[in-house]
Structure formats: C-alpha cells, structure tokens
Image (cartoon, rainbow, N blue to C red; front, side, top):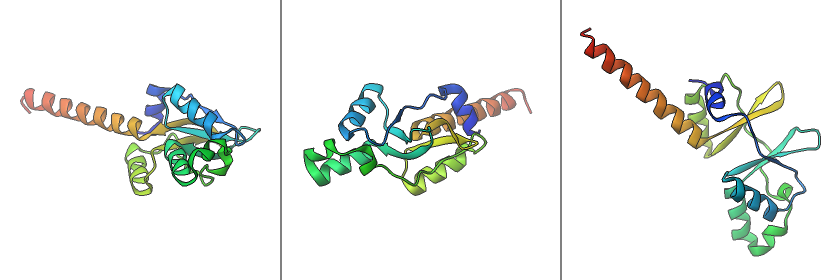
Length: 144
C-alpha cells in the first residue's frame, strides 16, 4: 500500500499555521481540530517547519507558561521530513519509528499535498492485514 491510498481515504486537507503565530494560538488550533501537528508555512505557502503537541509540551516544561507567548517559529522543527504519494506505508512506518515522528507532510512537486499521521499508517496496515487474511481464508475455503 502507498501513501496515495491513505490520502484517498482521509483526504488531503492540511491545517497550516504562520511562523509568527503564538504557541498558545497553535495549541488552541490543534485542540479545536483534534490534531497533533501543524505544518508551518511561509507567505508563499512553502513548508517552513512543523510544530507538534510534543514540541509545545517540551517548551512548557522548559519555560513554563511563558512558552505560550513564544512564536511558533521559536520551537518548530525546521528540517521537515516529508514523503511522496508513491512512498510505501511500510517505508513510512520505518521512518516514523526510527525518527520517533508522528506526522509526515506529503509533498508533490515541492508543494504540500497532504499529511500522514502514525494513526493513518497503523490503520492502513491493519486494513491491509485484514484484507490479506480474508483472501487467504477464501483461498483455503475454496479447497485449493
């Protein structure tokens, strides 16, 4: 299974945020949309970074309540790992596990085309495993 299949099921909508937005506003946005990360984009719509719940928690742990007044640019990850629609889910699982990441933006021709979470990856692997099990069951029941 490929990333494209995940995007077909979940959609390509990505919630983005500007680098100068406050961390508090980012937290409110994530909570309101029930998402764990925001892609940070520059005025031209290019990916400038990514900020996650984990980044916000770490900032609060280090700086206390003052962290909420920081700009997203102050704590975002600037070197964003991305993937392409043709990448396999198996590859994404490896990258997410080895780099301890929960969200990877999908990029096509340098433009943001979606985002995949670890939950999306796990769900797709479960669906794929169930499909394989059903195919094997059908094969055995057919007497082959």
